[in-house]
Length: 342
Ligand code: UD1
Image (tube, rainbow, N blue to C red; front, side):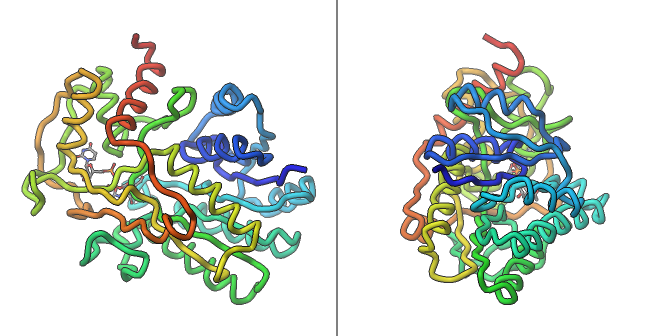
């Protein structure tokens, strides 16, 4: 019998790619999402790619009674991957309580039900934002956690603390926190991808929308950083590669291979790319030019961060495989499909 995995936020960007990889690896998936920042269309995409339509329950994980009813309905649940969260940095500064309530309460409801219904394993979506601007690069998991730059970033730090404290009081619970660097791109079939609402905050959706003519001009935030070309450097990781790391993490938890009840891993490529390098690589692989202008730095941005991925490589047996070129092409293919561009 297939092991049943709950994917919260499973109609969203990383969640939908992870649902695909889980199904491809022989897991059964049930998705919970309130569609606050995604649509049920991703279920069609998942079904077209895998031939399987995952079960879907639309509700808000902040409602404890609904979470309990869910665990009662799915008594065979083996593990959880918790993606469902708000993630817009700017909005979190304007509406911090919205972020704290949603991101913390949903996790606490899940943890309480995990204890109550004896579902011991959870993979948590965390972020490299917990490191701020690290002193040493590439950044390892041993780098200090720095004060968060935004309420969003703080919710990731607090959630990790909640998880760390919970494994002490609930010794059966096993947690893997995955700290993502910058996930980009789309599934190679272009059947699922990122669907930003309104004006994108993140670089790659802004690049693809500018190339598609939806935005007049990409603003490159800063060219006076102490980096080779002056623009900021990040570790851009292919979303389908990233999704596969979740399958490894689930396997590790279900087979009880974890050495500690709380483990955390960096997920990146191990390589830094500058904003200008991303733009130029995009232009090279797509043949489409991107109208851009250099403007001042964006508040809260770090100069450069990329991952030391040895721990994930060795312990999870996972490695990013897709090049920046292919990943940017996948982002463009998805954007073209959304906009009906040939
Ligand atoms: C941001 C968040 C991070 C979150 C991640 C995923 C901030 C400060 N950090 O990471 O906490 O986990 O998204 O959602 O917002 N850029 C431009 N022009 C643009 C957009 C971005 O030049 O129009 C630059 C940025 O200045 C940065 C790089 O591109 O140097 C990447 O930006 P972005 O995609 O927003 O990711 P991060 O800021 O790294």
